Image 1 (cartoon, one colour):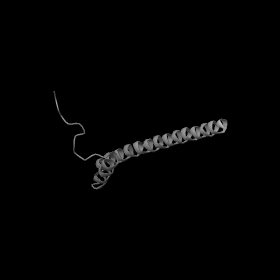
Image 2 (cartoon, one colour):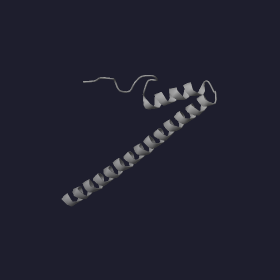
Image 3 (tube, helix red, strand yellow):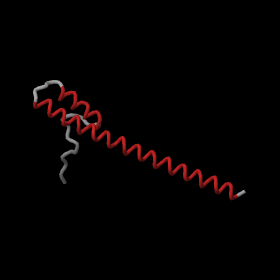
Image 4 (cartoon, one colour):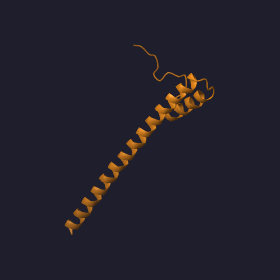
Length: 82
């Protein structure tokens, strides 16, 4: 009786660990794609500004701010000195 319960708990633990590892892997993959996409939008924005395309830098800045959850023109760290 206890052997079956112990075996079932072992299988449940293994499945839980495998699921958590797979979820962590998927989260890291999405994070890397997000970081790559943000870098591409910044480079494209710089290129568009250098070539005189007026509206693309504003759009890409908005996309970057939306992805990184920041406000344009606002310092990320407050200037507080002790």
